[in-house]
Amino acid sequence: MNHSNTDLGIAEIKLAAIRPHRLVELHEQFDRLVHQVSDFSAAGSRGPVCKRDDFSVASTTAGSARRLRKMTMARTSIKTALPSLVILAGIVFLAFSTFAVGQISAINSNVGSIATNWLPNVSSAKEMNVALGDLRLAYRNYIMAQSEDQLQKADGAITAAIADFRKQADLYRSLPMTSTDEALIGRVIDVFDGYVVTGSGITGSFKSRGLLASINAVSTELGPVGDRIAEDLDALVDFNTKGAQDAYTASQASYSWTVQTSYIAIGVSVLIMGVIVYFAYFCVARPIEIVRDSIANLAAGQTDRAIPFAGRKDEIGSIAEAIETFRKGAIEKKQLEETAARHRAQAEAERDRMKAETEAAANVRLAEATSGIADGLRRLADGDLSFQITEPFAAEFETLRSDLNSAVMRLGKTVESVARTTHALDGGAREIAQSADDLSKRTEQQAASLEETAAALDQITANLTNSSKRAEEAREAAAHATVSAKHSATVVANAVNAMGRIEASANQIASIIGVVDEIAFQTNLLALNAGVEAARAGDAGKGFAVVAQEVREFAQRSAQAAKEIKGCCHVKFPIPRMG
Image 1 (cartoon, rainbow, N blue to C red):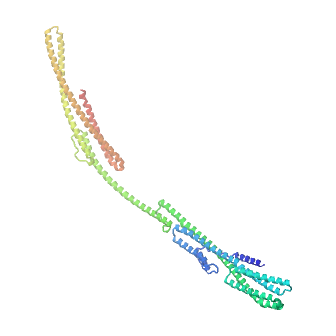
Image 2 (image 1 turned 90 degrees about the horizontal axis):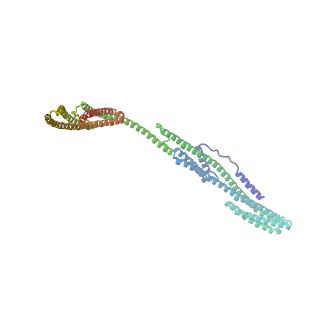
Image 3 (image 1 turned 90 degrees about the vertical axis):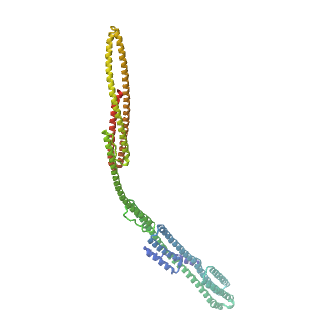
């Protein structure tokens, strides 16, 4: 029956421990949550059960939350902020875990003390009280025994009650005790020992005292001592019951604080996760998207908009500042390009002006040179071989002037030599014609003589004397004809020599004409190259191309004149060779 009561008490304590409590309402606002955690820390430090070390976890959580808010406002670097948020979440989880483990340990300790200390002590104290009641009843039964058998049963009950009491006392003393427990149980045992000694004396003198004296002794000697022992045992029961109740109350408080802290930790964790999500989107993803759009606009050439987030003190701010530097560089580059374009336009204008001046000067020099050359070629075409270009040309055309003067001089000398040779040929030809005329006359005379000789031969038969005489005359005439023929051969040889000299002079004229033709060809080639270079120069070389075309035409005219002179030489000078 006593063990059933003990089990029932333990069951009642367990049922009370799992009784539901009202949940703590969570605040959504960040600052209110921080203040609530701080208030919870302050209240916990004044609580009857939880220790101040347990509530330092809440203080740590509140401090971490404040640091999170300051960190977010200060915009620390992302590589610091994200790990800090994760570390903060880990700290909250670790703090809550530590706090929960501490509270669970406290609940376990309280339940353990109830199960292993307070309830066994209560049970032992009650068992001792029951044993004391059995012993008091056994003493009364011993005195009131009517037979020997009842007397022996009462004596056995006394012995069993004493043994049971001492067993429960030893069990009580083997359990953990406080100083109050030790004092009470020590006093109970000491008084109980005296009680047993007194009871043994009464039972031992029962027969000699008599029934009434023994009953009176039990009432006066054992009754007050038994009541005192019962009071001390009741005090032990009350003390241990109060200890069990205190342990139960502490367990209930720990459970309540654990539930509240759990919900607060859940709220803080949700808040931290919300802060992480908010930070990841609004402080990382969204700024990166905006910076990306700014980069795209910058790549498209839009440099009029400043790059956002350039003032932030984190990686995105560094990226934005770098891109802002690129934007400013692009603006400066554009300005430099515009300045360079203006300078380039000015340089182009200056170069065009200088080029125009240079081309004008070159055209003037070329015009002077071509004018002099054209005048010389015109005089050469008119047959004037005594002229010289005395007016100096530009340095690049001075060689052409010198070559032309030399060619004209050589051509004049050659033509002069040809003229002299032609004059000599003319005289020789007249002499040859005169000699041929004389030869013709003499031949006619010889023919007449031959006719006369033939006539004379007809008359040979008539006159031999006259024949001999006529033969002598014929011999003389033949000798004279032979001399005339030899003279004619000499004249013809002289004519042939004169014709050879004329042919040599003609060859020299042809050579000079070839030189003039070569000069005309080189001039034409030079003009052609000048025209090609003028075409390469574009619009700037049009004037030079016109001058080059005129030089080319003059060169072609010179070549045509040389060709005509050469044709005349080839037409006239083969006549003596054919004669």
